Amino acid sequence: MGSKAKKRVVLPTRPAPPTTEQILEDVRGAPAEDPVFTALAPEDSPGSSRRAENPEAQQEQLYQQSRAYVATNQRLRQAGDELRQRCEDLWQAGQELEQDVVQVKQVALSGASTTFSG
Image 1 (cartoon, helix red, strand yellow):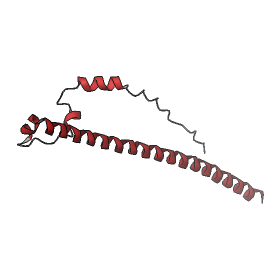
Image 2 (image 1 turned 45 degrees about the vertical axis):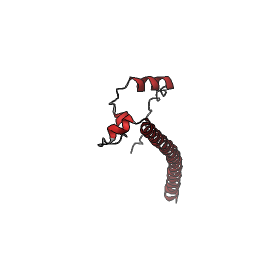
Image 3 (image 1 turned 90 degrees about the vertical axis):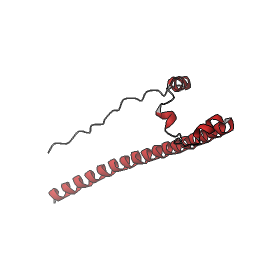
C-alpha cells in the first residue's frame, strides 16, 4: 500500500480592509434606497409622514437607529471573537489528533515487529 502525501491547501492572503475614508466614500456614493439604509428602517405606517416632519421624532429615530447599529456592531465583534477562539480550538485539536496518529502508528509498528520477531 502506498502512503498518501499530505496536501495542505494554501489560501490566498486576505486583502487589506478598507480605510475609513474608503468606507465613507462608499456610503456617501450609495443611493438612499440602498438596502444598507432600508433594511432596518421601520415599515411605512400612516403616521410616518407626520413623524418625518417633526424634528424631535426624526432625532429620536436616528438615535434609535444608532443604538441598533452599535448593538449589532457589538454582537458582530463578539461573534468574531468567538469564531477566532473556536478556530484556535480546532487548530489545537488538529495538532493533538496528528500527535495521536503518530503515536498510534508507532505502537502499531512496534507491535508488528514484536509479533514477527517472536
